[in-house]
Image (cartoon, rainbow, N blue to C red; front, side):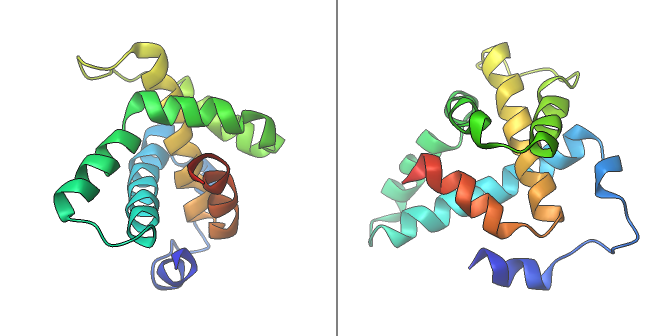
Length: 134
């Protein structure tokens, strides 16, 4: 399903995706992650929308994303690890309810997903997310 989305949305090949700021990558990665989570929840069977929303909120938050980031770190390539670290180390201010360490790891996680999305690597996104969501 993600491949179909990627076929319709892409950045021109003349743009060097590595030159995007980590926050730009995290911005799009947040959307990619949420779409993946919502799709994952729908595939697990018909549920009321309110229950779907509560399940999504439990999976789409800084502490859960930080947990997932730590779970996949040993599966990342050198290039992916670099993107993750750029996102994690960026200067950003967490919301009041988020732990700083979790927020930074979550930003790195989202930056990685955003990078893979823009590189049209939906296969890799699915591979990594299936490690933590299944």
